[in-house]
Image (tube, rainbow, N blue to C red; front, side):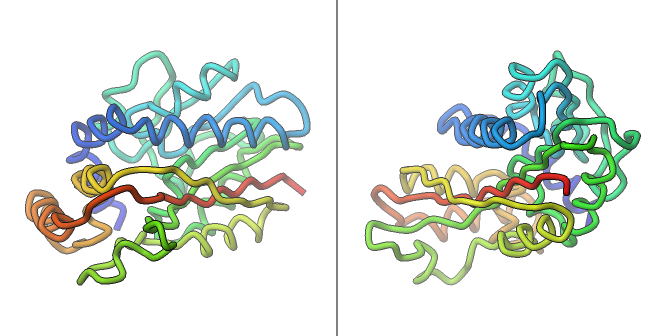
Length: 240
């Protein structure tokens, strides 16, 4: 599973950056999450582990606020795009950092990509200092003006490896959590751009190779029109 995730994101660098340049979505999520983490931390958030940093969009946000930000990602190709911060190639199940090393661990749009978030949340608890905080963001999907899932009438559902409920439950087992929902107005064209990222097209066609799954996603979403709402659940946990 980890090898598949690594390959998916190694293949996604250019499409990921194109989506972010068009929408600014991951930057927005990181800014909102950073604010929630700072509001709930028991003291300054001076050291942040950006777990699932990707090309560094979220890392740059946290680095503006913390004295030390470390970017961790399973994809070497993604990390190659990141400059100006320490980088670690690794996965969430075995964080290659010492205990009590960080004031915050941030899983910006990443924890839902693992099959067992409970392991990752235990690791987050291990590396956090007393009074530290952890945050995660997980997608809830896209809805039309009537609140109806835009995939309801399509042959495929855009599904994460782990749902938002499971991510929240895993964090709640280790931390005292607060949750909420962020909503973004977006377009049908941007839903297509999201699924043009090979790693995200795997939400629809996980068994196909990168080019084929993106092509099939484009066909599936070709008739989607208008403005829709994208929803993300945020979860912030405080060390007990």
